Length: 174
Image 1 (cartoon, rainbow, N blue to C red):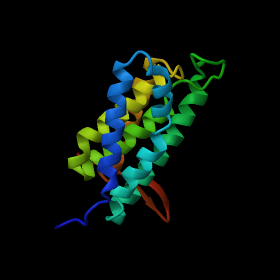
Image 2 (cartoon, one colour):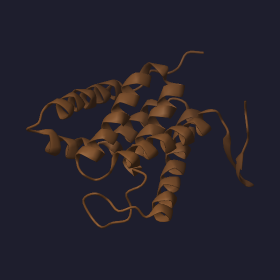
Image 3 (cartoon, rainbow, N blue to C red):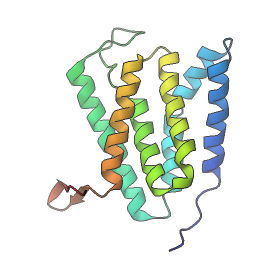
């Protein structure tokens, strides 16, 4: 079964984020301002990832559900843990929501579009790195967010979570 071609700007955007990440990791002079810029790229990354799956309604729906579930789980954990951020007294540090959402998207992309696997995970990792470099999170927050996003994303790509008129259900598939 041949899939429709995806938007051509998705690989370009992922490539540009990878180039920016190389500069953010290597240059001492521009590290923090660039990290802050990359830190804000999670929304375009999520949009580009969603658009790349738009040719298949099921994949796009699973992607949207995975990102939404990740955001809900992240906010619940932030409220339950209450860890202070390194740059403020806000108790919303653990887990990193940007990183969790980016890894949920990367996981869905990796499963449905294997050709985007490495660029997607590199982009998600760069977003996580930028959250630490910008002073918004500790490494444990980013690692926790990455794990949360990955595992929730995996649950949705295997058709484990189902939404029906009767409600939300979970089905184990081994």
